[in-house]
Amino acid sequence: MLRLGIRFKQLLLVTGDLIIFQVALLLTLLLRYGHVEQRSWDLHALPFGVVSTLWIVGSYVAGLYDFNVLKNGIKFFRLYLEGMIANLAVALAFFYLIPIFGIEPRTNLFLYFAIVLLLGYGWRLGYNRLIANTLFRNRVLFIGSGMDAAKIRTMLERSAFGFHLVAVFETTPNSRFEDPEVAWYSSLGDIEKIIRERDIHTILLGHKPDDIPGLRDALYKTLFLPVTLLDRTALEETITGRIPLEYVSQTWFLEHLRENEKAWYEMAKRIGDILMAIPFGIITLILYPIVALIIKVSSPGPALYSQIRLGKFGKQFRIWKFRTMHVNAEENGPQFTADAKTDPRLFAAGRVLRRLRLDEFPQIWNVLRGNLSFIGPRPERPEFVEQLTERMPYYSLRHLTRPGLTGWAQVRFLTPTASLEDNLKKLQYDVYYIKHRSPLLDIAILLKTIAIVIRRQGT
Image (tube, rainbow, N blue to C red; front, side, top):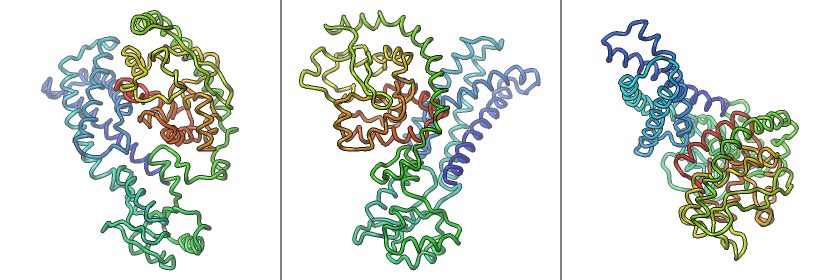
């Protein structure tokens, strides 16, 4: 039910955008020619229909369908404007590099863009204010500690999923926070009364029912009420795109990770990797001499270097990369990669290569060999894996699937992983990917990776 409501709101947002695009085309022709003839509409409908589809994809890449950013304000305006400017560039490239429709709509295209920009932003403002947080508005009762309740409240406030914390059953005394909109309770015997008085739609569990005396019996009474029971892990997973490992156990993994059900997907993905790697490998091969020359001119030493990484099932393999660091960068031992903007181990040209991801080109041949996939958790060095596994036994779960050139953690957690703690945070996104991996999620990751490279985000 949770995911169904979110999917419906996303579908409504996309549908609204498509309607705006059609209305904008009608207004463009009306303003340009004073009336709309059938011949003029037929001439423009198909190519601008293709542009509309490309703009939907572009908006997704820009993050305009991410419910964690659908908050009116200067940040959202900037995001919307950047996304639409990128869409305009895509439209110009479409009409002038693929001239198959017999029209070169210079004036019409810019007029169309201006109308979409105004109408579209107005629609988005209305959606963010009136629909995102009100449609399927969900009033939440949280059962757990006050400290966890504060984290839940902050998480819900930062998103536009329509969840609002209105009541807390406190399991840890003296840990309350001040909020006039949140009511606090300490007696489970009143749970039915709380649900009716506070108009609760969802009970969010911060504990297992058997962990708190009387909780299981109290929850049993709610079976006869129109409320949804939801584990906090499931809610965080949906809202943040990660699985909070501090709240899960081995039993959780046994219930949710079924690798035999992914066999067909892994086979299809491997075929797709090969079909993509061959043309990509040939194209990037042409760039090898140029990149190698830049490196040789910028820093003494070899253009390529190799490292041992851990792949599927923990098997070691060797990857090759274009060198972006000074030759003696790790004379004091292996270190986690810091931010490419400030990492002193990078030479100037290497810094640029790193941020444009050009140093990763040789790994396409690892994809052909089967060590890597295009999409998957990034492979880590054995010396780091040993340290990370000691801190988090679940770290080995990353090795259930083939590692990738880019992954869900790389597009969702853009903070440089300069420490063990940062890598453990990324693990939450990797486990989410392993649980939910599918062709659609892989396509989403690929599109978001393109946006990150263009914006030169991440490490």
